[in-house]
Amino acid sequence: MSGPRPGAVVVVPPPSPGERGRPAPTARTAAGRWVQQVMARPLTTYYLLVGSTSVLVVLGLVMVLSSSSVDSIVKGGSPYAAFAKQTKYALFGLPLMLLATRMTTAWQTRLAWFVLVAALGFQALVFVPGIGCGSGGNQNWVCTPGFSAQPSEAVKLALALWLGVVLVRKQALLGQVRHVLVPGLLGAAAAVGAVLAGKDLGTALVIALLVAGALFVAGVPVWMFATGGVLAAIGVAGLIVSQPSSNRAQRIGSWLGECTDSAGLCFQTDHGTWALASGGLFGLGLGESRQKWSYLPAAHNDFIFAIIGEELGLLGTLMVLGLFVLLAVAMLRIVRHHPEPSARITTGAIFAWVIGQALVNIGVVLRLVPVVGVPLPLVSAGGSALTMTMAALGVVISYARSDPQAAAALAARPGVVRRSIAVLGRSGTHRSRRSRG
Image (cartoon, rainbow, N blue to C red; front, side, top):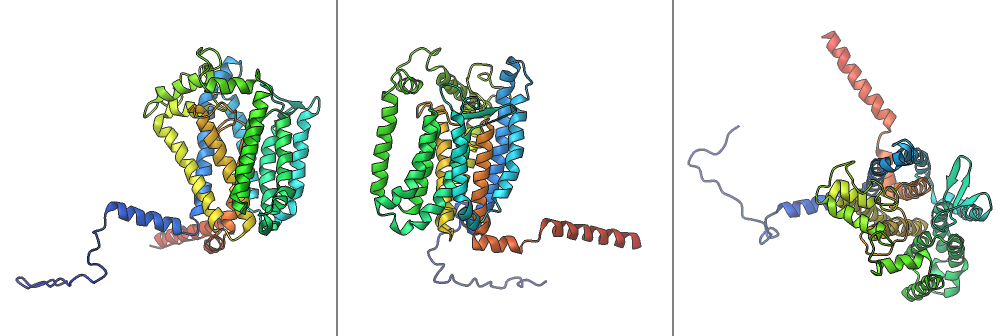
């Protein structure tokens, strides 16, 4: 290899007109280009959904074990009781999720009405004596020997699938109030009313968010949203004012600072705040929470985010927020780019459900909103919520798979079996060559 002779003059060509005045590339611009390249890949949405969902489920199992072990021992049970139950529901939700990833919009159209009617019928069982049960004044569970479930979680998924079908058929007419009301808002009102009849205001608010997400993506005019928001606010205020001595009114009062006794109405929120504050930047360490020693009620349910902050610190809470941001980005990509209108509308509903519920839960722990009583999706203990959320995200993953570019990229990949056979074949060839040598 020959280089320039000693003493030779090396001529550097002048920059092209397009390169003159262009700033030198920096690490920031290089990182920005890399992000753009990654986001432009056809399977990015698919991997974001699968990855963030998987990590949140695993993190939830770990934190349920950590936050529930002491309480389980105090109640005379195994320290692994809540963890084993949550793991069982996660294993039950996994095949549901995998089955949902294979769902097509054609099957969604066939099953939408049946699924909604079945879910509402399941919800009606909470009012049957001897079958329906609840706690804290709510009647929102179906309890039989060896089985318990919260039907309102199934109602969320069924309503999201149903709205994706009925709103598409009337999408060109959604500027007229009567076409928004029938059948879309009537079906949504039936779902919200069935849940409110069981006095579960928190879940009813999440369902209202779900409906708003579907209507927004479908193209309902903004003035209808404003009118619906005002009517919903009046309805919620009426439910609170009509029962001034109820648990709801007490929660609102404690949020507004009416309680000064930490042993009273502010007990749960105060201990949640102390848990977050004591975690600092890096946390006390996994399993080292102090508030879980019977100080913080619902430590492994509604207030598990406080335990994450205490044990994993600010970095742990930011990691959880980052995972939900990735979920949100992936679902918004489907809402913007998927060619099927029903897929966009259903994804908008599930986005408002999962991300909205996560924001409400985290806002409760941070004392930004009153205590509502909704779990942190995929993370909090609760079998019905976990399985239905996994199934709902499986539906969104099916939309990510069915996008034409993603479908082509998935079809071009060799299957797992073929890749394994190829690897085994290459290793066998290498072994035979070594033996001959």
